[in-house]
Image 1: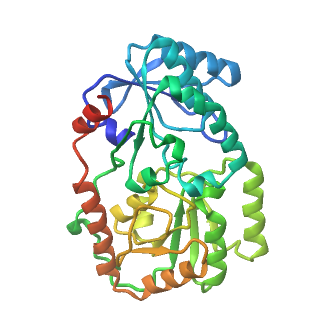
Image 2 (image 1 turned 90 degrees about the horizontal axis):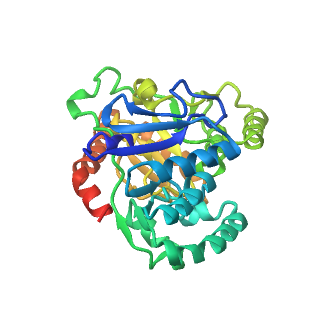
Length: 349
């Protein structure tokens, strides 16, 4: 969203939480509209409330802001998607929903009973509200549940940072085939496959180290992952680094052998693009829109051993050529992005 909003001139109001996934308050102004430091036509409201306080803030701000369109960045989130849609009916605002991969088959297979119950409740509501769907790939559109096929939708890709140029690649050590650091960058939830990445590490030579970047969103899942690391004897080879902004770790990532992401479903995969954009190859599941190349190894999610083989293969390839291929893939994607003005003109029409 930040990459997109940097390119637009419209007046935009962004309502979001003032809390990180662990519940800690961020060091930002709370509970009032402030100008975004990077662009003055963007105002941000960081809501610090919980429970009913947050619900009240959502109703108040959505009803009182002068915007005509409500653009939601989730499908299943009750507070940040369902409630605002109810408010939109009261205020007459049009609604755009970006599911962000939540409706893809792999994502729907997780907590399926809860999600199916949710869908059965909200489905009649869409007969009256008639929102638009913003999808980011044909794969995401093709996997929409049947009942959403008749909802108006637009496919526009994810906006992203400009990749390094080929001349920006640091030449030092790029011919070295001894890179042994692998990175995993994602929210630490079952969908993203961090447990599979750890299993892959157990099958690799002991010289390989996995750096995990991301926050846990569930204490039970965190304990499961930590127990797995200990039971497999990987305490010295799997490092949990917490969330680190990509800008702060991009240099480290650019010197890593590869990203591993055995995800159960991505409509795009920002960490995939981000790694390619700094010349780092990726080893990913077959549940993303990305296709195989020298620097992109697509593996069958049901066959973890393929991830092992792909990592070993990357290490045998010419390092400079592989990293140039990574940048080429990122550059091709970036070069095909439509102008942000076209995106807004079509999505708001």
